[in-house]
Image (cartoon, rainbow, N blue to C red; front, side):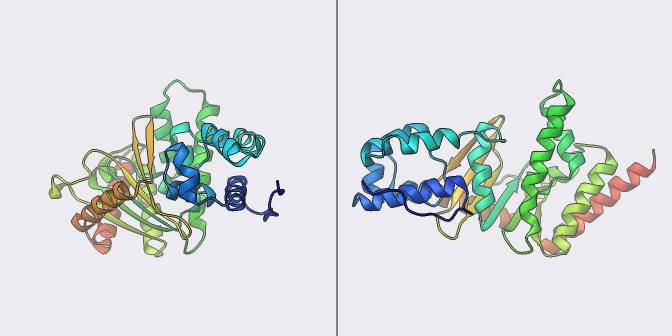
Length: 280
């Protein structure tokens, strides 16, 4: 049995594990579909594992070790990589988000995590966990703000967000903090770092009424869709399902205000919050 391929040490641990899976599979003369069949997953899913976009689960790792004769290599590495600073239902989506080249998101209730300010994030987490120690909230806020560091790159990922008008009107934190958060979003849009649209109340019913939607595109892997609910989340890679979610996003985007009109509305609502804050 040949040894592991020499890999770039600057790669992430999960990317290294995926590259090793590709090496072992190819050495065994198996296609991605051949390797995925006993696990009842598609060849494209194996490709996502190999590219480091999807996280390898322990039961999959054990099957790979059995099929490829790797003497527990994948199970051991899978166990070592299992820890995450994100909730279990979001961990894999967060890791995929960090690798995405394009992110398109519809937000029906809250400002997306990548665009939240510290005060806004703190208010959200405190609402989620009203009895948690302040140290726990501090850690959650820090982790969320670290996620937003992906926007420090001037061009990648391309972030396109559609905010329901309810997101602007729902006062999650103080009027002053809401104004600052909306000014933050307006600033990113004004600098052409993000594209933001607002879906107004006047549009009525639409395809995404039931929840949020995040679409992620990659240079070296098929796109993913992430759906989030109350304490739950689901990452979708099935091509027909992802195409349906892409259609949903496209229709929501088409119903939204133009980026220019949306920016004007965001700034107007921020000004309303600022006036409210000055009255107290």
